[in-house]
Image (cartoon, rainbow, N blue to C red; front, side, top):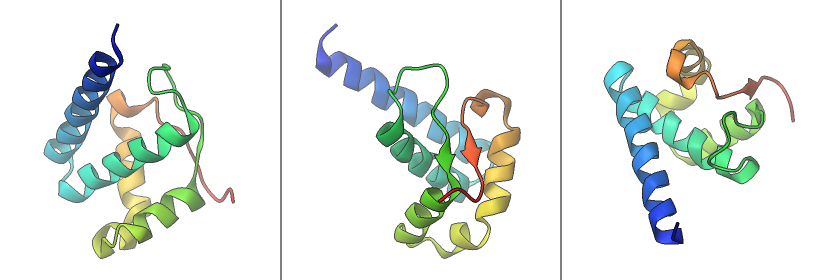
Length: 98
């Protein structure tokens, strides 16, 4: 497969996930999903069945840098909701790891 095709498939998959979270939760949840995918690609190959653990401190820093006060204020609740969505069970979040 060409690199362009792989990148297109990855972007399409990510957009489907973000859109699904926006419909199921809200726009802030979709933004969190986008940020989680961005952080996941730093630690994990995009096509593996399960991501490597994402430290809570890194998620919190990334959300803070995104300048979304509502998401920053309710981050724990949004992570809890995303954790309960069955098709997102491949995300792993470690709370309190620096």
